[in-house]
Image 1 (cartoon, one colour):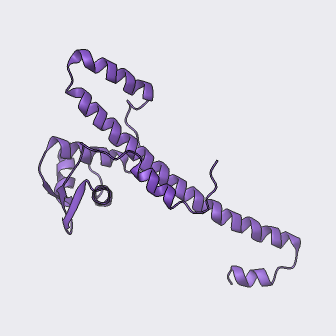
Image 2 (cartoon, rainbow, N blue to C red; image 1 turned 180 degrees about the vertical axis):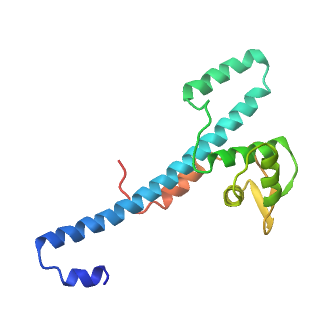
Image 3 (cartoon, rainbow, N blue to C red; image 1 turned 120 degrees about the vertical axis):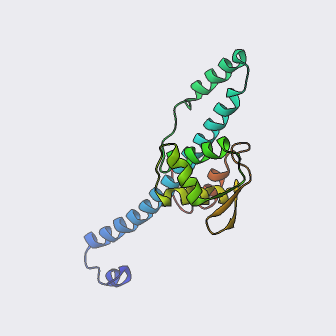
Amino acid sequence: MNANDISHDISSPYEVALEAALSDLERARACECHAQERLSAAEAHVAELTHLVQTLVAVLPQDRKSLYLQRLASIGAVKPITTRGGEVFDKVIDLFSRRPRKEWTASEVQAALAETGVRPDQKAVYNVLNYLARSGRLKRIGRGHYLVVDVGVTFQVGHDLDDADAHGGGCMES
């Protein structure tokens, strides 16, 4: 029996209210999933930018560092952001910036991370690599083979959030 079959057999105002509540619940659940995806994308973006700023500040003369570190602290982005996959993402970005080689396989990334004591599952590594490929930072050149294009230098501010807003649908946000 599906929702259409039920709606023809509604016999009381309580069932009408129940159907309306269930429909609202389905829409609210979809909005919740969309909001979680947007939050994850925003948190990952904050982590990327925090890492970028910290990397750039590290090359400044000591007398200039404090100004930028204070500003970073005032934004509240000094501590690492933990997200679903956030730690793996950060470690992959760090790996690519420390080892400036152009081509990687997913298994090489996983092995290199294991050398540093991080042992993410294969799915998490593939998810990060696929995200980096979708965002243009890596180019997929074959199954499980990626070419580093632009990791750690240029980040498009708001790219993920703008895409999420464009696909938001009828979700009401407060």
